[in-house]
Length: 132
Image (spheres, rainbow, N blue to C red):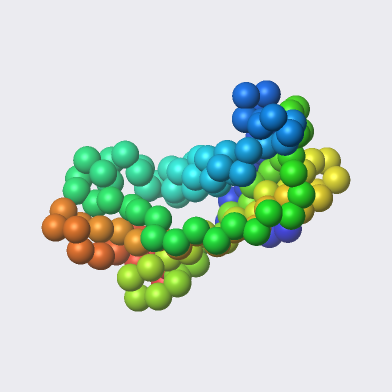
C-alpha cells in the first residue's frame, strides 16, 4: 500500500453487479463518494453539517478510467489524495485496487468546489487550510 491521505477497504455486494456478473459501472462512483465522505469526516469536515450551514460541496467534474472489473464478493481498497485544482476548486485523486493482489481496478479524478448560500464558489477556511 502506497502513501495516501486516506484508504478504506470494502467488499462488493451481490446487488451491485449487473447481468454480466461484474460491478455496474455507476456503482464505482458510489464507492468513490462514500470514501470521500469518510475522508472528510476523518479530518473534521462534516459534509452534512456543511450543508446545514449553507455550504454545499459539489462535484463539477468526474474522470474515471476503468481498468479491470470487480465481481461479487471481491474485496477492494479505495485510496484517496486531496489536492488543490485551482483557486476555487479541489480534486480527489482516487484509485480502486482489488485485494489481496492490489490489481488496479479504477483510477479517478473527482473535481469539486464549495458553493456558499448564494450559489457562488467559495472555499471555507477549513478547506483552504487543508489545501495550503
